[in-house]
Length: 310
Image 1 (spheres, rainbow, N blue to C red):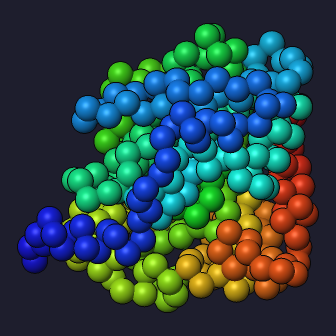
Image 2: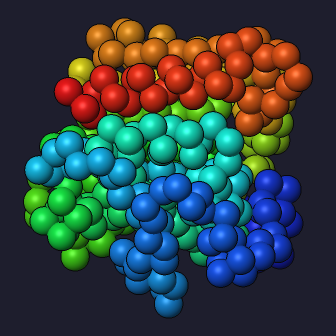
């Protein structure tokens, strides 16, 4: 089945975000109490410079610091590195910085009507990690103590980045070479399958056509790639520890995703923690959610420190 560019654009606009203010203005959101450097280029692809914001440790506790890479959400077609400043997310970054851990909030190619697919976004996220590994001495990074963290679309991408094999995605060979270890991954309200219809019954993916921009065509023609973009299918006995948090009132991406992911991890004896917040919608919205955002943040920080700081 053929799809015109107009059709792809129409499908894309149902879950994308437009109209971000200029980067210079958004950079003012970065907290003054953190040691940041913004706009560092890690990759150039298709005429686009991909950049990150670096959050240096507030206290030097390691000769070579552990690293956490944050991957923003935005429906795969929107958002930017400054989403890290959201309440809850930035508190995790601040907590890690206080414990001597370096953090980075990265950008990736968006699925915004161009030929870009979710596989390209994964490749960019992986290349960001590989950039730090290749430049470990410059940034004082320990390549064997890396974690990833993301929310929503970023929650999906962070899982694929941590669980998928580099060779299965269109990564840049310029970053090939040095070995590294992702020890843990934290994911908020993610989509964990692009093939399991019971996990796609609310919000974004009720209609199978929503997958077309992400896969570059219909599922029937891209099922192999859909599986490579499905974190639940990527879990192995050697997978890193997984932290999941989701609201049971989420109408954008079903809480069943987190529940299914937890079950799949346990079946492979992969360390996993799963927090289900009662009454919470997407983004942990809600007036009286339980556990609260503050409590979820604390659980996330404790999990990341468990695997990165020890």
